[in-house]
Length: 312
Image (cartoon, rainbow, N blue to C red; front, side, top):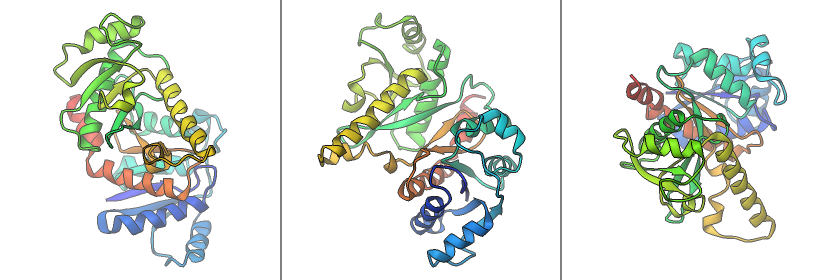
């Protein structure tokens, strides 16, 4: 199994990317090999500085990257030899089993949509986040940013996608799916959530538990929480802010430490024809390590292919 890493992506590239890759290699052992996509001279220099043999990784050379502030579609089109474009080419050809980056998120999504493409039957691909639950588990929230506006059938499909991820990556048996709303009663919410509830309540494709409120995410009332990307992104950013505020006040708490994004590393893009994992632009070496490990878990679970089979 090979995991492709964009070495040129992120705010602190290439240093933290190579450092994170070295840490991931140590922990993954023989489970997976890591392919570094970036400037070969920089990679070799960093390997030398870390005392690692030059043949530690397979290297795909390019000095061309896509900047964080570049227009995603234009940059991807005019930079066919960028690290992101090369990563998707190798994923499409089967030379790597997963591709991951902390670079330009928009370019990663453009690459996924136009290189490996959406799985037939999936209306909208989405991304998730894992929210820590008091009992020690996680609640998977989706979508958290790609789809600001959704229709009821899109939310219904998020229930399917989230269930598959919960089962395959987090090993949750028969995951409970909840619809994010402003009340538990069936008639609550706006037109979108009311219509989505009607679609979801009789579903045989996932274990629908009904409406859940924002507070229920952390109490473990559902294993998968479905919402539009606008709502999900607000919830995610609020959780990140809470972690930052707690740290600034010097509060140490085992539960709140699990809000640290570095633990989770990144998130798979669900609904595309390949294992694509996106990480935070400010990722540290530890976050890069965990992103690569999540990529290995995703490829090992054959997540994209399992989703493809469900939507046949």
